[in-house]
Image (cartoon, rainbow, N blue to C red):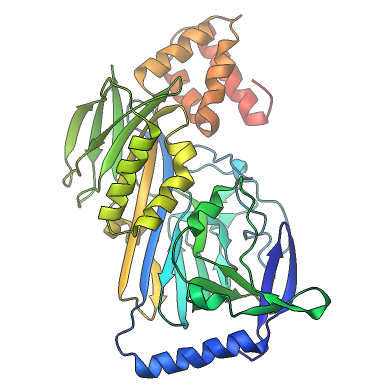
Length: 429
Protein backbone atom coordinates (compact mmCIF):
# COMPACT_ATOMS: atom_id res chain seq x y z
CA UNK A 1 0.00 0.00 0.00
CA UNK A 2 1.42 3.38 -1.00
CA UNK A 3 1.98 6.22 1.53
CA UNK A 4 -1.08 7.98 0.11
CA UNK A 5 -3.55 5.16 0.60
CA UNK A 6 -7.07 5.57 -0.90
CA UNK A 7 -9.88 5.22 1.62
CA UNK A 8 -13.61 4.92 1.11
CA UNK A 9 -15.95 6.69 3.55
CA UNK A 10 -19.71 6.31 3.69
CA UNK A 11 -21.99 8.99 5.15
CA UNK A 12 -25.59 7.77 5.38
CA UNK A 13 -26.67 6.60 1.95
CA UNK A 14 -24.15 8.74 0.08
CA UNK A 15 -20.63 7.49 -0.65
CA UNK A 16 -17.57 9.63 -1.42
CA UNK A 17 -14.03 8.65 -2.27
CA UNK A 18 -11.29 10.16 -0.12
CA UNK A 19 -7.53 9.78 0.35
CA UNK A 20 -5.78 8.60 3.51
CA UNK A 21 -2.94 10.66 4.92
CA UNK A 22 0.42 8.99 5.22
CA UNK A 23 0.75 9.45 8.99
CA UNK A 24 -1.65 6.72 10.15
CA UNK A 25 -1.10 4.21 7.36
CA UNK A 26 2.69 4.43 7.31
CA UNK A 27 2.77 3.84 11.07
CA UNK A 28 0.67 0.70 10.57
CA UNK A 29 3.01 -0.56 7.87
CA UNK A 30 6.05 -0.02 10.07
CA UNK A 31 4.39 -1.83 12.98
CA UNK A 32 3.41 -4.71 10.72
CA UNK A 33 6.99 -5.18 9.52
CA UNK A 34 8.33 -4.89 13.07
CA UNK A 35 5.82 -7.42 14.45
CA UNK A 36 6.54 -9.89 11.65
CA UNK A 37 10.25 -9.85 12.52
CA UNK A 38 10.00 -9.87 16.33
CA UNK A 39 6.97 -12.06 17.06
CA UNK A 40 7.12 -15.69 16.02
CA UNK A 41 4.04 -16.79 17.98
CA UNK A 42 1.46 -14.13 17.06
CA UNK A 43 -1.85 -15.71 16.14
CA UNK A 44 -4.51 -15.15 13.52
CA UNK A 45 -7.94 -16.20 14.79
CA UNK A 46 -11.04 -16.41 12.60
CA UNK A 47 -14.55 -16.85 13.94
CA UNK A 48 -17.69 -16.97 11.80
CA UNK A 49 -21.35 -17.26 12.60
CA UNK A 50 -24.21 -17.46 10.14
CA UNK A 51 -27.78 -18.58 9.67
CA UNK A 52 -29.90 -20.16 6.97
CA UNK A 53 -33.67 -20.48 6.85
CA UNK A 54 -35.84 -23.18 5.31
CA UNK A 55 -39.49 -24.23 5.37
CA UNK A 56 -41.26 -27.57 5.50
CA UNK A 57 -44.81 -28.77 5.79
CA UNK A 58 -45.92 -30.74 8.81
CA UNK A 59 -44.70 -33.89 7.04
CA UNK A 60 -41.09 -32.66 7.17
CA UNK A 61 -40.66 -32.23 3.40
CA UNK A 62 -38.52 -29.21 2.54
CA UNK A 63 -40.30 -26.72 0.23
CA UNK A 64 -39.10 -23.85 -1.95
CA UNK A 65 -40.06 -20.29 -1.06
CA UNK A 66 -39.32 -16.69 -2.01
CA UNK A 67 -37.09 -14.76 0.41
CA UNK A 68 -39.15 -11.58 -0.15
CA UNK A 69 -36.92 -9.47 2.14
CA UNK A 70 -35.02 -6.99 -0.03
CA UNK A 71 -34.71 -3.89 2.15
CA UNK A 72 -33.31 -5.07 5.49
CA UNK A 73 -29.70 -4.13 4.74
CA UNK A 74 -27.85 -0.79 4.59
CA UNK A 75 -27.59 0.75 1.15
CA UNK A 76 -23.80 0.50 1.10
CA UNK A 77 -23.96 -3.31 0.99
CA UNK A 78 -22.80 -4.70 -2.35
CA UNK A 79 -24.73 -6.85 -4.82
CA UNK A 80 -23.94 -8.15 -8.29
CA UNK A 81 -25.65 -5.00 -9.58
CA UNK A 82 -23.82 -2.27 -7.64
CA UNK A 83 -20.41 -3.85 -7.06
CA UNK A 84 -17.85 -1.36 -8.50
CA UNK A 85 -17.26 -2.17 -12.14
CA UNK A 86 -20.80 -3.49 -12.67
CA UNK A 87 -23.89 -1.57 -13.84
CA UNK A 88 -26.39 -0.49 -11.21
CA UNK A 89 -29.78 -2.16 -11.03
CA UNK A 90 -32.19 -3.37 -8.40
CA UNK A 91 -31.83 -6.83 -6.86
CA UNK A 92 -35.33 -8.24 -6.49
CA UNK A 93 -34.91 -11.42 -4.50
CA UNK A 94 -38.64 -12.06 -4.49
CA UNK A 95 -38.23 -13.17 -8.12
CA UNK A 96 -36.09 -16.11 -7.00
CA UNK A 97 -37.20 -19.30 -5.30
CA UNK A 98 -34.93 -21.58 -3.30
CA UNK A 99 -35.04 -24.14 -0.52
CA UNK A 100 -32.71 -22.24 1.80
CA UNK A 101 -31.96 -18.61 2.43
CA UNK A 102 -28.36 -18.14 3.55
CA UNK A 103 -28.88 -15.10 5.72
CA UNK A 104 -25.92 -13.62 7.51
CA UNK A 105 -22.58 -15.34 7.65
CA UNK A 106 -20.23 -12.76 9.19
CA UNK A 107 -16.52 -13.54 9.47
CA UNK A 108 -14.43 -11.94 12.22
CA UNK A 109 -10.63 -11.69 12.32
CA UNK A 110 -8.47 -11.25 15.41
CA UNK A 111 -4.85 -10.21 15.22
CA UNK A 112 -2.44 -8.29 17.48
CA UNK A 113 -0.74 -6.64 14.51
CA UNK A 114 -1.73 -5.36 11.10
CA UNK A 115 -1.45 -8.02 8.43
CA UNK A 116 -2.74 -8.94 4.99
CA UNK A 117 -4.69 -12.12 4.21
CA UNK A 118 -6.35 -13.55 1.11
CA UNK A 119 -9.97 -14.66 1.55
CA UNK A 120 -12.46 -16.43 -0.69
CA UNK A 121 -15.83 -18.09 0.00
CA UNK A 122 -17.58 -20.53 -2.36
CA UNK A 123 -21.23 -21.57 -2.51
CA UNK A 124 -21.42 -24.61 -4.84
CA UNK A 125 -25.19 -25.15 -4.44
CA UNK A 126 -26.34 -21.55 -4.28
CA UNK A 127 -26.16 -17.93 -5.34
CA UNK A 128 -24.58 -15.04 -3.43
CA UNK A 129 -26.86 -12.01 -3.40
CA UNK A 130 -25.26 -9.46 -1.04
CA UNK A 131 -21.85 -8.87 0.52
CA UNK A 132 -19.59 -6.28 2.09
CA UNK A 133 -16.90 -4.99 1.80
CA UNK A 134 -16.31 -4.96 -1.96
CA UNK A 135 -14.67 -7.99 -3.55
CA UNK A 136 -11.94 -8.31 -6.15
CA UNK A 137 -14.05 -10.64 -8.31
CA UNK A 138 -17.12 -12.86 -7.99
CA UNK A 139 -19.67 -15.09 -9.64
CA UNK A 140 -23.11 -14.57 -8.11
CA UNK A 141 -24.34 -18.01 -9.20
CA UNK A 142 -27.57 -16.59 -10.66
CA UNK A 143 -29.10 -16.53 -14.11
CA UNK A 144 -30.50 -13.01 -14.34
CA UNK A 145 -32.50 -13.79 -17.48
CA UNK A 146 -34.43 -16.68 -15.98
CA UNK A 147 -34.19 -15.66 -12.29
CA UNK A 148 -32.74 -19.06 -11.51
CA UNK A 149 -30.18 -20.14 -8.91
CA UNK A 150 -27.56 -21.99 -10.97
CA UNK A 151 -24.90 -22.44 -8.28
CA UNK A 152 -21.10 -22.42 -8.27
CA UNK A 153 -21.10 -18.94 -6.76
CA UNK A 154 -18.04 -17.43 -5.14
CA UNK A 155 -16.74 -14.20 -3.64
CA UNK A 156 -13.03 -13.50 -3.87
CA UNK A 157 -11.95 -10.62 -1.64
CA UNK A 158 -8.35 -11.34 -2.60
CA UNK A 159 -6.12 -9.21 -0.37
CA UNK A 160 -7.72 -7.98 2.85
CA UNK A 161 -5.84 -5.75 5.23
CA UNK A 162 -6.53 -6.43 8.91
CA UNK A 163 -6.17 -3.53 11.35
CA UNK A 164 -6.35 -4.12 15.13
CA UNK A 165 -9.17 -2.00 16.63
CA UNK A 166 -6.82 0.20 18.67
CA UNK A 167 -4.85 1.05 15.51
CA UNK A 168 -7.82 2.13 13.41
CA UNK A 169 -8.00 5.53 15.12
CA UNK A 170 -4.64 6.41 13.55
CA UNK A 171 -5.97 6.18 10.00
CA UNK A 172 -6.88 9.58 8.57
CA UNK A 173 -8.95 10.43 5.51
CA UNK A 174 -9.25 13.64 3.56
CA UNK A 175 -12.60 15.19 4.38
CA UNK A 176 -14.35 18.43 3.43
CA UNK A 177 -11.98 21.22 2.35
CA UNK A 178 -9.16 18.65 2.27
CA UNK A 179 -9.02 18.61 6.07
CA UNK A 180 -7.77 15.39 7.75
CA UNK A 181 -10.36 13.44 9.69
CA UNK A 182 -10.48 9.95 11.25
CA UNK A 183 -11.51 7.07 9.02
CA UNK A 184 -14.89 5.62 9.97
CA UNK A 185 -16.99 2.56 9.39
CA UNK A 186 -19.98 3.09 7.10
CA UNK A 187 -22.95 4.60 8.92
CA UNK A 188 -25.68 2.14 9.87
CA UNK A 189 -29.22 3.23 10.56
CA UNK A 190 -30.34 1.89 13.98
CA UNK A 191 -33.31 0.16 12.33
CA UNK A 192 -30.95 -2.27 10.61
CA UNK A 193 -29.90 -5.39 12.52
CA UNK A 194 -26.67 -5.31 10.52
CA UNK A 195 -25.09 -3.02 13.10
CA UNK A 196 -25.51 -5.57 15.92
CA UNK A 197 -22.79 -7.72 14.34
CA UNK A 198 -20.22 -4.96 15.00
CA UNK A 199 -20.44 -5.33 18.78
CA UNK A 200 -17.23 -7.39 19.08
CA UNK A 201 -13.49 -6.84 19.61
CA UNK A 202 -12.59 -8.02 16.10
CA UNK A 203 -10.10 -6.33 13.78
CA UNK A 204 -11.12 -3.85 11.10
CA UNK A 205 -11.04 -5.29 7.59
CA UNK A 206 -10.09 -3.10 4.63
CA UNK A 207 -10.60 -3.92 0.97
CA UNK A 208 -9.88 -1.80 -2.10
CA UNK A 209 -12.21 -1.64 -5.09
CA UNK A 210 -11.32 -1.38 -8.77
CA UNK A 211 -11.60 2.42 -8.79
CA UNK A 212 -8.97 2.80 -6.07
CA UNK A 213 -11.13 3.38 -2.99
CA UNK A 214 -10.99 1.51 0.32
CA UNK A 215 -13.89 0.10 2.32
CA UNK A 216 -13.77 -0.59 6.07
CA UNK A 217 -15.88 -2.93 8.22
CA UNK A 218 -15.61 -5.06 11.40
CA UNK A 219 -16.17 -8.30 9.47
CA UNK A 220 -16.80 -9.89 6.09
CA UNK A 221 -20.51 -10.21 5.38
CA UNK A 222 -22.32 -12.23 2.73
CA UNK A 223 -25.80 -13.57 2.03
CA UNK A 224 -27.44 -15.78 -0.58
CA UNK A 225 -29.96 -18.42 -1.61
CA UNK A 226 -29.26 -22.14 -1.73
CA UNK A 227 -30.63 -25.50 -2.79
CA UNK A 228 -28.36 -27.75 -0.77
CA UNK A 229 -29.71 -30.79 1.03
CA UNK A 230 -30.38 -29.96 4.66
CA UNK A 231 -29.25 -32.49 7.23
CA UNK A 232 -32.09 -32.16 9.75
CA UNK A 233 -35.80 -32.78 9.21
CA UNK A 234 -38.65 -31.71 11.50
CA UNK A 235 -42.09 -33.32 11.38
CA UNK A 236 -45.00 -31.86 13.35
CA UNK A 237 -47.11 -34.74 14.65
CA UNK A 238 -49.81 -32.63 16.29
CA UNK A 239 -50.68 -31.83 19.91
CA UNK A 240 -47.25 -30.22 20.49
CA UNK A 241 -45.40 -33.40 19.55
CA UNK A 242 -42.54 -33.41 17.03
CA UNK A 243 -40.11 -35.81 15.40
CA UNK A 244 -36.58 -34.66 14.60
CA UNK A 245 -34.31 -36.69 12.30
CA UNK A 246 -30.62 -36.25 11.57
CA UNK A 247 -29.87 -37.59 8.07
CA UNK A 248 -26.16 -36.68 8.16
CA UNK A 249 -23.18 -38.94 8.76
CA UNK A 250 -22.08 -36.69 11.65
CA UNK A 251 -23.80 -35.64 14.86
CA UNK A 252 -25.75 -32.40 15.03
CA UNK A 253 -25.05 -29.56 17.40
CA UNK A 254 -27.55 -28.29 19.99
CA UNK A 255 -31.19 -27.79 18.93
CA UNK A 256 -34.19 -25.75 20.09
CA UNK A 257 -37.86 -26.19 19.18
CA UNK A 258 -39.69 -22.87 19.52
CA UNK A 259 -43.40 -22.08 19.15
CA UNK A 260 -44.80 -18.54 19.34
CA UNK A 261 -48.56 -17.91 19.26
CA UNK A 262 -50.45 -14.83 20.44
CA UNK A 263 -47.14 -13.34 21.67
CA UNK A 264 -46.67 -16.35 23.97
CA UNK A 265 -43.39 -18.26 23.70
CA UNK A 266 -42.67 -21.88 24.53
CA UNK A 267 -39.49 -23.76 23.77
CA UNK A 268 -37.48 -26.84 24.56
CA UNK A 269 -33.80 -27.55 23.96
CA UNK A 270 -32.61 -30.89 22.67
CA UNK A 271 -29.31 -32.69 22.93
CA UNK A 272 -27.32 -33.29 19.73
CA UNK A 273 -28.53 -36.16 17.59
CA UNK A 274 -26.18 -38.94 16.53
CA UNK A 275 -25.75 -39.72 12.81
CA UNK A 276 -29.06 -40.95 11.32
CA UNK A 277 -30.78 -40.76 14.71
CA UNK A 278 -34.43 -39.77 15.19
CA UNK A 279 -36.23 -38.68 18.32
CA UNK A 280 -39.76 -37.71 19.28
CA UNK A 281 -40.27 -34.92 21.77
CA UNK A 282 -43.03 -32.81 23.30
CA UNK A 283 -43.10 -29.05 23.55
CA UNK A 284 -43.59 -28.13 27.22
CA UNK A 285 -46.86 -26.49 28.22
CA UNK A 286 -45.45 -23.75 30.51
CA UNK A 287 -44.70 -20.43 28.83
CA UNK A 288 -41.18 -19.01 28.80
CA UNK A 289 -39.59 -15.66 27.92
CA UNK A 290 -37.47 -14.27 25.12
CA UNK A 291 -34.79 -13.45 27.69
CA UNK A 292 -34.56 -17.06 28.89
CA UNK A 293 -34.35 -18.42 25.34
CA UNK A 294 -31.77 -15.80 24.33
CA UNK A 295 -29.66 -16.61 27.38
CA UNK A 296 -29.66 -20.34 26.63
CA UNK A 297 -28.79 -19.68 22.99
CA UNK A 298 -25.84 -17.47 24.00
CA UNK A 299 -24.61 -20.20 26.33
CA UNK A 300 -24.73 -22.84 23.56
CA UNK A 301 -23.01 -20.58 21.01
CA UNK A 302 -20.23 -19.71 23.45
CA UNK A 303 -19.75 -23.35 24.42
CA UNK A 304 -19.45 -24.16 20.70
CA UNK A 305 -16.45 -21.84 20.39
CA UNK A 306 -17.63 -18.28 19.76
CA UNK A 307 -16.48 -15.46 21.99
CA UNK A 308 -19.25 -14.28 24.29
CA UNK A 309 -19.53 -10.92 22.51
CA UNK A 310 -19.92 -12.76 19.20
CA UNK A 311 -22.66 -14.94 20.68
CA UNK A 312 -24.53 -11.87 21.92
CA UNK A 313 -24.05 -10.19 18.54
CA UNK A 314 -25.57 -13.16 16.76
CA UNK A 315 -28.53 -13.50 19.13
CA UNK A 316 -29.22 -9.77 19.12
CA UNK A 317 -29.14 -9.73 15.32
CA UNK A 318 -31.88 -12.37 15.08
CA UNK A 319 -33.76 -11.78 18.32
CA UNK A 320 -36.76 -10.13 16.61
CA UNK A 321 -37.23 -12.99 14.14
CA UNK A 322 -36.06 -16.12 15.96
CA UNK A 323 -37.80 -15.31 19.23
CA UNK A 324 -40.67 -13.00 18.25
CA UNK A 325 -42.17 -13.96 14.86
CA UNK A 326 -45.31 -16.12 15.21
CA UNK A 327 -44.84 -19.70 14.15
CA UNK A 328 -43.12 -22.99 14.94
CA UNK A 329 -39.45 -23.51 14.21
CA UNK A 330 -36.44 -25.68 14.92
CA UNK A 331 -33.13 -23.89 15.51
CA UNK A 332 -30.19 -26.26 15.12
CA UNK A 333 -26.40 -25.98 15.01
CA UNK A 334 -24.71 -27.47 11.98
CA UNK A 335 -21.45 -29.36 12.63
CA UNK A 336 -18.53 -27.42 11.17
CA UNK A 337 -17.75 -30.26 8.78
CA UNK A 338 -21.07 -29.65 7.01
CA UNK A 339 -20.62 -25.87 7.09
CA UNK A 340 -17.25 -26.28 5.36
CA UNK A 341 -18.89 -28.45 2.69
CA UNK A 342 -21.81 -26.08 2.06
CA UNK A 343 -19.83 -22.82 2.01
CA UNK A 344 -16.09 -23.54 1.78
CA UNK A 345 -13.99 -20.70 3.20
CA UNK A 346 -10.38 -20.32 2.04
CA UNK A 347 -7.98 -18.09 4.00
CA UNK A 348 -4.30 -17.64 3.17
CA UNK A 349 -2.24 -17.78 5.31
CA UNK A 350 -4.13 -20.47 7.19
CA UNK A 351 -5.40 -19.08 10.51
CA UNK A 352 -4.24 -20.60 13.79
CA UNK A 353 -7.88 -21.07 14.76
CA UNK A 354 -10.98 -21.11 12.56
CA UNK A 355 -14.38 -21.69 14.14
CA UNK A 356 -17.51 -21.56 12.00
CA UNK A 357 -21.01 -21.91 13.46
CA UNK A 358 -23.99 -22.09 11.14
CA UNK A 359 -27.45 -22.17 12.74
CA UNK A 360 -30.36 -23.47 10.70
CA UNK A 361 -33.86 -22.12 11.18
CA UNK A 362 -36.38 -24.70 9.99
CA UNK A 363 -39.89 -23.25 9.91
CA UNK A 364 -42.84 -25.65 9.86
CA UNK A 365 -46.63 -25.84 9.86
CA UNK A 366 -48.31 -27.91 12.54
CA UNK A 367 -51.41 -29.98 11.76
CA UNK A 368 -53.34 -27.47 13.86
CA UNK A 369 -52.08 -24.60 11.66
CA UNK A 370 -53.21 -26.45 8.54
CA UNK A 371 -56.63 -27.18 10.00
CA UNK A 372 -57.13 -23.53 10.98
CA UNK A 373 -56.26 -22.32 7.47
CA UNK A 374 -58.73 -24.79 5.93
CA UNK A 375 -61.47 -23.72 8.34
CA UNK A 376 -60.88 -20.03 7.66
CA UNK A 377 -60.90 -20.66 3.91
CA UNK A 378 -64.16 -22.58 4.10
CA UNK A 379 -65.98 -19.45 5.31
CA UNK A 380 -66.20 -17.18 2.25
CA UNK A 381 -67.23 -14.14 4.32
CA UNK A 382 -64.49 -14.40 6.96
CA UNK A 383 -61.71 -11.82 6.86
CA UNK A 384 -59.58 -13.69 9.36
CA UNK A 385 -57.86 -15.67 6.61
CA UNK A 386 -55.92 -12.60 5.46
CA UNK A 387 -54.75 -11.86 9.01
CA UNK A 388 -53.61 -15.45 9.44
CA UNK A 389 -51.74 -15.43 6.13
CA UNK A 390 -50.09 -12.10 6.95
CA UNK A 391 -48.58 -13.72 10.04
CA UNK A 392 -46.74 -16.18 7.81
CA UNK A 393 -44.77 -13.43 6.04
CA UNK A 394 -42.28 -14.84 3.52
CA UNK A 395 -43.50 -18.37 4.28
CA UNK A 396 -47.06 -17.67 3.07
CA UNK A 397 -46.53 -19.11 -0.41
CA UNK A 398 -45.16 -22.54 0.62
CA UNK A 399 -47.69 -22.68 3.47
CA UNK A 400 -50.56 -22.17 1.01
CA UNK A 401 -49.10 -24.72 -1.41
CA UNK A 402 -48.87 -27.33 1.33
CA UNK A 403 -52.37 -26.71 2.72
CA UNK A 404 -53.93 -26.74 -0.76
CA UNK A 405 -52.49 -30.21 -1.35
CA UNK A 406 -54.02 -31.39 1.94
CA UNK A 407 -57.48 -29.83 1.37
CA UNK A 408 -60.34 -31.92 -0.04
CA UNK A 409 -63.11 -29.35 0.50
CA UNK A 410 -63.49 -27.81 -2.98
CA UNK A 411 -64.65 -24.26 -1.98
CA UNK A 412 -61.91 -23.99 0.63
CA UNK A 413 -59.28 -25.26 -1.81
CA UNK A 414 -60.49 -22.81 -4.48
CA UNK A 415 -60.22 -19.88 -2.09
CA UNK A 416 -56.74 -20.89 -0.97
CA UNK A 417 -55.71 -21.30 -4.61
CA UNK A 418 -57.00 -17.80 -5.37
CA UNK A 419 -55.02 -16.39 -2.44
CA UNK A 420 -51.90 -18.12 -3.77
CA UNK A 421 -52.45 -16.66 -7.25
CA UNK A 422 -52.93 -13.18 -5.80
CA UNK A 423 -49.72 -13.54 -3.83
CA UNK A 424 -47.72 -14.57 -6.87
CA UNK A 425 -48.95 -11.68 -9.02
CA UNK A 426 -48.58 -9.12 -6.23
CA UNK A 427 -52.29 -8.52 -5.63
CA UNK A 428 -53.54 -7.93 -2.09
CA UNK A 429 -55.10 -10.87 -0.23
